Amino acid sequence: MPSPDPIITPQDWTQPLCPALLFPSPANPLAVDVGCGKGRYLLARALRCPEMNFLGIDRMGSRMHKLSRKLVRADLHHVRLAHVEAAYAVQQLLAPDSVALFTIFFPDPWPKRRHHRRRLLCPAFLDDLVIALQQGGHLHVATDHLEYFDAIAALLATDERFRSIAPYTPPPEEMTDFEVIFTGQGKPIGRASFEKL
Ligand SMILES: C[S@@+](CC[C@H](N)C(=O)[O-])C[C@H]1O[C@@H](n2cnc3c(N)ncnc32)[C@H](O)[C@@H]1O
Image (cartoon, rainbow, N blue to C red; front, side):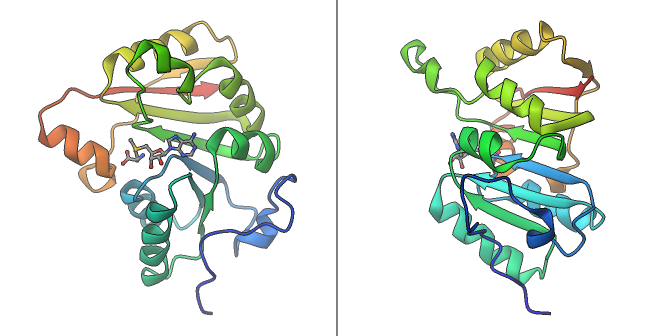
C-alpha cells in the first residue's frame, strides 16, 4: 500500500479527528507529540512502537514538510502530522479520553517576562490536555529552560488531576533535535512525567 500523505487535511477542522480515517489500526493507543519540530523523537519512537499510533503537531510548515518526507521514506503508516496551532488542536481535534501519551519536548520558552503569556503550558492548555488524555495516560515534558521547567513543575504539582511519576529519559536515538543540540552544549535538561489520575 503506498504511504498516504502524513500531513492530515481533515474535512472539518472543528470536529475531533477520527482514528479510523487516519490509521490502519485505529484501536491502537494514540501518542501525541506536541511541537514535534523536525521529528527526531517521533520517527525513532514510531519505528520502535508499531503497536501505537502517533500524531505530531507543529505550526511550522517547513518542519512539517521535511518530517513528512522522512515518514514517507520510512514507509510508516501509523504516524500522522497536523500542521496546526497546538492549543487549538488539543481543544478541538482530539476527542475526550482519546490520548494515551502526550509528549511536549523543548516547548518554546518565551524567556522574557512580558512574553510568558505566550507559553504553551498554562492552566487553560492543561485543562484541555486533561480532557483529551485517558485515565492513566501519561504526559512527558522536557526543557533546557530551567525557569520554565520550574513553572511547569509548579503548575502540575498543585494539579490534583495528575500524579508525578519517574521522568521519561530517552535513549540516545529518541532524543529530540533540540535535545541533541542542548546536551551537546552541556546544558542541564529538566524532565518531568505525570500520570492522569
Ligand atoms: C524549540 S522547538 C522543539 C521541537 C522538538 N520538540 C524538539 O525538541 O526538537 C518548538 C517547536 O514547537 C513548535 N511550536 C511552538 N509553539 C507552538 C504552538 N503553539 N503550536 C504548534 N507548534 C508550536 C515550533 O514550531 C517548534 O517546532
